[in-house]
Image: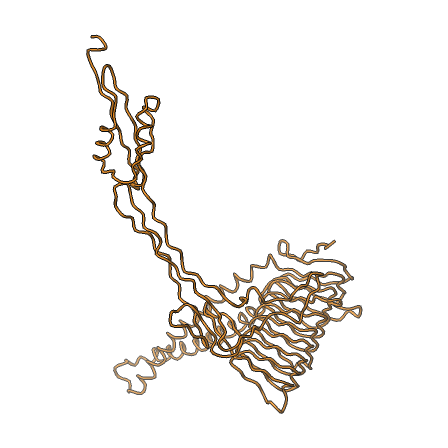
Length: 468
């Protein structure tokens, strides 16, 4: 058989991508005396694959050139849809995470007077602007079918108490003068209670739902309770101050252990003497802590030139830092880190409650055993006795459930107490004899002055490392 006795015409293979946005052409060469593929054959192949949109005639002609036979060439392309933009919120006030904390100027000086705890706004002030999202742009595939675009996500204005939105729900305004903050992802405005002078007999005790700003002192024997933050421009002496937020005292805190300062967040002051402080997060003191009982869920730091801790008990969940701890007089000073003091208190309280409930259960069990030993059938006892028996059984069931919950929580706390690896005590200058350091369950007694040191937990023991 000779070559010219058979012939196969050239063909057009059309390859369509799965997303129907691109089609490629592969021209198959003719064999023997067959005719080459032509544009008519290509158009028929495209029609058979239902390709009707975005066809590029120039690319088809290119694919038909002999040098391009056997190669895949893009000959049709649709338009992909463009997803819509999500709506977004623009906050017109600095967020708490951006503004809270001491401000540092260009020279590195720290301004402990401006901690940004309170950010005041006026009634009618714009708080949040919403930029609406859009529907995007639809696309079209190579078969001429429209592809719907994915719409942008909408977001609601974070409207909280004392705020109002405009009718288009695009702007959020304050309805009162006050302190703006974010609670549970909602913007709220707390009216600020401003005390012009001291908290004394002219004001009585203060109990306020929002933030409290006191321009003078809080005098001995008075109480201030705030549902937000407390700022005291003067001193606190022998008073009780509690806050659901933070407490900032520009002067010092003194008292004969009658002073109790308690904040769910942090406490900042110039100095502390003979007082009790309890902070959910940090205690930051500029000059000194003297003969005081301090608890902090996170850290206790004394940060200024003197930076002294002497006497009393200092308990922090994570870290204690000062320049000087203790004194040349070997003043007893207890420093404990590695266990959140609030959790330690809860642990002790739960163990006491567990013991009491066990005693009550023992009494109930004893009484039930006495009844069972009496051999009296429940059907033959009086109504009053029957009610007493039912009540005893109900109490026993409730006690068992309560004990179970208490035991579970004790186990959780005990596992929490094991996480003490990151805890540390930093002494930037000197620590004196008379100081006892506890990290978790391990104890270190300081017998000689030690300079520039950090105490950490290493394999269950307190280990001393140098800061220099």
